[in-house]
Length: 226
Ligand code: NI
Image 1: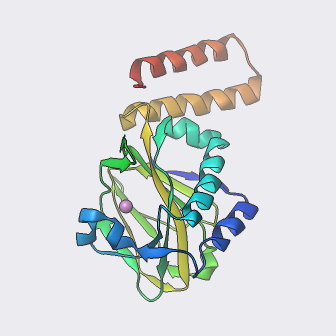
Image 2: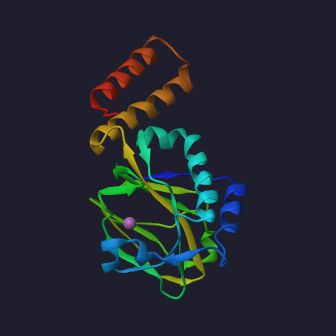
């Protein structure tokens, strides 16, 4: 499932993020941080993850995630990899088609990447190119979202960032390990949760919504690993 989270970041948070992502920020070659992925067609820069800039940027994204019910419902997060920040500049910076690593290391902890998330930070009109292309069963889907919007997608999908031909594309990206590893089960829980939210909004809480909430939690109890 590909899911767009609209206005994940507020305009104020976007401004604060951009202020920390200027030319004076500790940018390093994206390929240098990527280990074996350096072999791939990766041409961008990232903020050094052990920098003061990173320490100030990460809470902007993590805080926004915690107040977004759609994110929590779709991902059922067990662990969230500390967000990273990157930029692609004209002319031509891009990231060729690749699949993200399955297992990531965050300090002494290991994390299985079940979902990937990209948060767009630049205004669409400020750059050309720089689309996030995700290949799913329907083919290649292209995304260029408004600043503050995010795209969630299964980490196992082939994806790329097309060359930026004008301006600069800023983004945050990170991975989520879910309490429910199988995508198909996460999808059922998400659909049930969203239907329940709509039912309650239309009819209020009643015996049936309480019963279905019980079904939701009992499925989650069966399928989750804590
Ligand atoms: Ni990737």
